Image 1 (tube, rainbow, N blue to C red):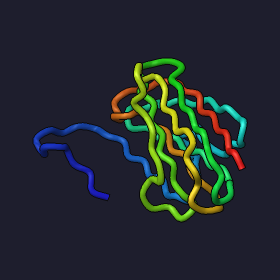
Image 2 (image 1 turned 90 degrees about the vertical axis):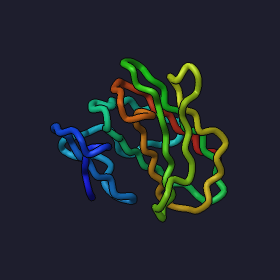
Image 3 (image 1 turned 90 degrees about the horizontal axis):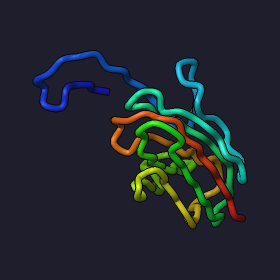
Length: 139
């Protein structure tokens, strides 16, 4: 991991976080995240501008998911990334729905069976706020 200023012409303090997929979804420094079940709604907070929160669920290949993240307070612009059990690049992403207070991943069919990871964040990693996250898995 290499960290630097965008144009290498400024200095300042920063924070760094690491999320390994599959892996732990919470840490002592950030308790938001964990397991989410179909039909459940969780609440969380993007506390720092570059914060991410992760939630896991287990589903079978061919299932269809509906995942929605909604801003509850602050300037947060919701963004969702969905990662498959095998990791790699995001399998699907959603965000930026006008008025930029909701991200909706609707009707996405899962490509494999196992534990999926939902990563939620601010769209441009420059705002904070509280959110709600809901999941529906349709067998």
